[in-house]
Length: 171
Image 1: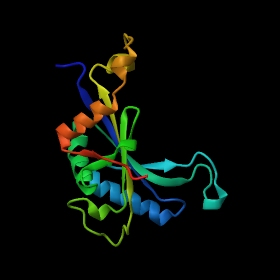
Image 2: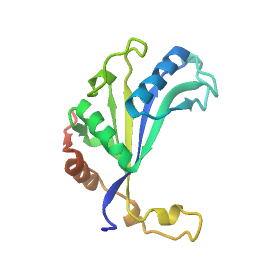
Image 3: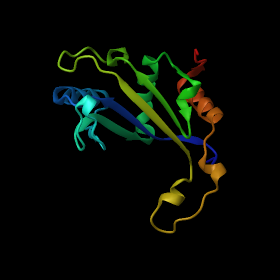
């Protein structure tokens, strides 16, 4: 087992609904039908009167999927995004991209109860052995060069595992 190998840490899919309670239920229904898991509510940290949002209000839903369970869902989501992403989508140890409409995802059909919703997808990467600094017992140190995953390594992983490619951003 190569300790420098890049693997998926987790994937978070987020659907924002704003202050509308019906939209919140639709977001939860969409995420549950896509992933088969129960989504959590996104809670606002601040109030924003222009959007009619109060502190502590539910403003969206998200679901977190870790490890190998994320791969088939990532494949479907990347297919909906034409197997491509911009260079600016990679920052730190993660890759983020969005989908305008869920009906672009293979196997998903339009549901009038849900309506038209988009979503944000964030995929976090890590190297093997990172558990050493996260565990409770006998915690140890890992050098920074082992913690960081470069853009080139993320791109190589996405090409190898999913056939995804990076496109030039138009400015």
